[in-house]
Amino acid sequence: MNKYYNELFLGKPIYYKSLIFYPLTIEEITKITDIETFRNCMLPFIITKDFLIEQKKISKDEACNLNIFEDYIIKEQAMLQQMAFMLSTYCKTSDIALLDNKVILYNEGKNSTFEIDKYNFEDISDILCQLTCMTKIKVELPPPNMSERQRDIWEKLQAGRKRSAKKNESHIYDIMNICEFCGNYYISVAELKSMTLWQMMNCYKAKTNMKIYDDNLLIGLAAHDLKSVIKNNHWSQKLLIRD
Image 1 (cartoon, one colour):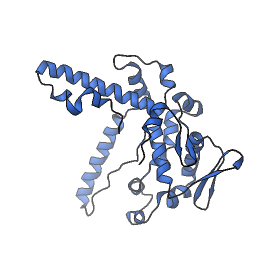
Image 2 (image 1 turned 180 degrees about the vertical axis):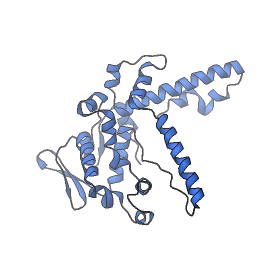
Image 3 (image 1 turned 60 degrees about the vertical axis):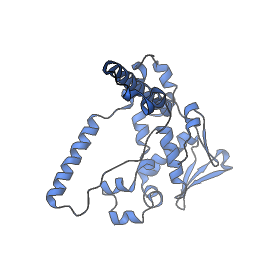
Image 4 (image 1 turned 90 degrees about the horizontal axis):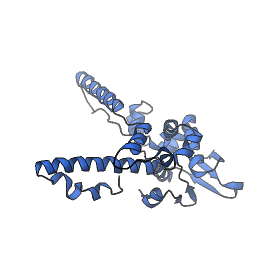
């Protein structure tokens, strides 16, 4: 997977062959819809076979030879609408069509087109995931050949983990609040609105990582043990741009 850190950091367009993805600021997104709804429209680009199995959309046997784009997404009207919305928003085109298992994006005046198919769909998904700071959905499927009792225990454990994850989930407004007030410098709402989703998440990671470093430094100085703030835990490592 290509990493577009330069473009993401500077808020510059990402070029993929003849297709251009334009970065959107928080303010631009909120003029279209709310951010949570916007991120929900990323579903076609983050679903996995395991997710479809868990949701009972397909069986394990069907998953073996399934191509998510060609065999599932383009056959689901809701998925197509979400896909068209994200592509039209980030690629700045309102002319999108489905033809022969391909999604066709027309440029102005229909003088040129770009075809999204099963061969380049994952590349497109990777770019949109980077722009929106989202990742593929990860699910844990039950181990095979479990007894009825084992399955009951496993399902209860999974339900507990999901409740805990839901309770501790960080929402966009939580992240923005941390970006605004956390750390030694204040970032105004106006400045946050001018950031892209990636820039805001980078700010969030930098501020929280530096807070952890500062806390560990104080503890280390008091305990005369600085192992937790050197080498890979040094502040300079905490600010590296990486996944």
